[in-house]
Length: 92
Length: 260
Image (tube, helix red, strand yellow):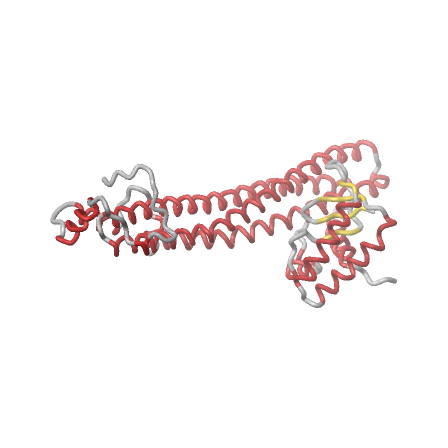
């Protein structure tokens, strides 16, 4: 599946490793719910590292929507909350 | 159905945006031109935003440069004042020097943060540029090859793909603009402080005369006080050395001391 990391671009990610990713994604939600910036930072770092390590970067000429979109590495709590509401996205 | 994770929700929100674009036109092929036009506008916007960030960074760097010159000038003045036995004046110069140094400490991370945003935005702009070119090629192929009905899926994919990229770049731009606005207002406040004279100690252009310099000149020429004459005489004695307390943290070696 195709995964985008905001600010970095898209990766092709092996579906078989999706479970690992889902675990971290759930913990990311926990971090947002708990409003815990330290937890957010550590989970997000692990999540992005997983995608960067296992994924293959897509070329510039590829035009496909992503099935998953991950926040930028330095995204804070407020930014993530904005992102999860419609207003957070600049119309494209 | 499993609870939807954060990554899937964000992806979905991006797709909703793309679908709004797709729903806009009767003939899906019209969307291609409409979207392409938006992409070109977006590229121009990103470049403007990049220029803004660079301007802000240069301004902060300029302030750092000015503060750095001040520290050198104040250091010279402190040495001169001490040489003339004007310890109060030397103390004043050193106090101002340390405030200029702390200004540099505050400005340095700002310049670095702006540089980081600039780098990120540069990469984002390049990526968008690549995607826009790919879209333009795809657009012409789709128009030439497919009927409206056949084109639907192809267009959907291309438009969703580019729309997501634009959303991504838009967010990067927003971040950069927020950071820049924050730092610009700080830089502006500093500029105003300097202009008002409140900080003239820390950022006076080299060559312009400040009050320490004026005091130095005055004690040098005209009618030197007995004290300063005594101090000068004392300074000429072979055993003359500055008071020990002023040596700490203050480098006393310097080149080209010509004591004009």
